[in-house]
Amino acid sequence: MAVLVLLQGGQAVPHTLDGQEVLIGRHPDCGVQLESNAVSRRHARVFMQDGGYAIEDLGSGNGTSVNGQVIEKATPLENRDRIKLGPVLMRFEDGDGASGDIGSTMVGVSLDDADDATIMSSVETGDGFGALGVRPEEKLKGVLEISRALAGAVDVESLLPKVLDTLFGIFTQADRGCVLLRDTDQGELVPRAMKHRRESEDATVTLSRTVVKKVVEDRAGLLSADASSDSQFAASQSISNLAIRSMMCVPMLGIDGEVMGVINLDTQNPVNQFNNDDLELLQAVAGQAALSFDSARLMATFAAKQKQDSELDIARGVQEALLPETLPEAEGYSFFASYDAAQAVGGDYYDALELADGKICLAFGDVAGKGVPGALIMSRISSCVQNTMAFATSIEEAVAAINNHMCANAVEGRFVTFVLAIIDPVENHLTLINGGHMSPMIVTPAGTIEEFDTASVGLPIGVMEDFPFEVVERPIAEGEIVVIFTDGVDEAMNPAGELYTLERMRDFLLTGPRQADQLGQALLADVRKFADGREQNDDITIMTFGRDSAVTA
Image (cartoon, rainbow, N blue to C red; front, side, top):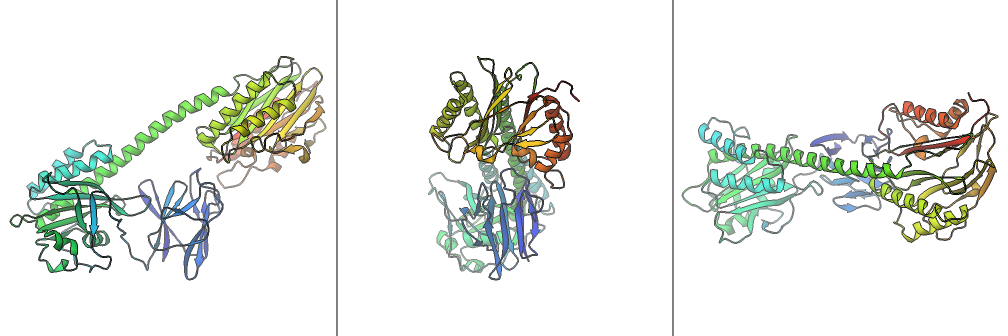
């Protein structure tokens, strides 16, 4: 039986592959639904191919990788393959395959032996974490020592040397020690810490690949009382070459039961060799070290999140400062604007400026890309609009200058759909340019919805320098309301996975209040009610303006 194992939050969640195809993504119709904004709605699919399974990226924004390699076409899956979709890590497991991949040689540590080394039998080691039945006072002392040494450690890099220092204090006969941890991206065990009893020794610690593989597969400790002559290790060249008299290797089991690492100690002391009691004690210590490591990793994650949240709070404050504190006031007109970011910060944008000639400028945009990158582009266009409108003599000149500036400072893939509108509240006249944005909706006094001709929609801002944008002009009739919005409105999703849709929006606008500010507030409330608390995948931004009726509802 094949399964996809989701590795997230310190847990391994299996998803059985019992069909011909399974979709992976954020959308509710995906067989494996992932709650991450960095994952596309339909990110990838796993399907049957040539008697096995393969994975294919479905044009996702952040790509799909297998064992660290970004895939560009359907890629066959093998047992223990590591799959990464954006920041989300999964593992493919086939019941027919083997497990326990061990990483290649790294600086300071060498994993010796041929890949076809003979599998050894393991030595019985009690309950795995060491019962206090044999030499209980020594076991208890050892566990207490490691607990004190590791207490409060939050930095993994500093934690691992502490583990080895404590072990060398407990096992005075140990000459060399090494800790290997599983790399979360590649799934391999890689060396992370090593120690020599004598500083004059060669800086390289050589481990037996045969031993490590056996420990990982059996999830049990392994002991050799005299490795240089032990028949178990006849195929293990590294052991014989090193003339190791005694060695022991134990797994570090995480709270989910997975092998998160191994601890290896060896000695060349022919008199004071390791024994079964030592192995049980080492397993008890390894269990405590694994718990401390899990705690340290959790604390590190928490600290990183706190730092990130603090930085995002600052970024959110900066972004909010870029939005207008107040909207313009003009006799006979009302205005409304609202911005709900899907993440702490986002890429939607609006602005409202009162020009020197008494006209009102409204700017509205949606950056391709959300989160911090979108917010950075949003800040750039905000500054550009304000600076441009200070000297531009026409809407054509203004949009041309804004577009050329964004083209000259373009970030690949980060364009902006953009609407710039100029309102003359005296002549009741609207001038508008649409750069790649969805058409604003106009609610008429007759109870209909009008939209601008799609032929008047130009390219997004920042795509082509000197693009000739079309200017649209029309009068603003008494009681007309113009609604500008981002696709986060019609794509707002409720807990059932249903979208708000443009059709629902049009129906609401026809039955909503007949004053622009009230209609904007009501529309936002209806979208929020529809979403019913579900976390959204896109920013929701609404701007409404219009000429008040003589009698308003």
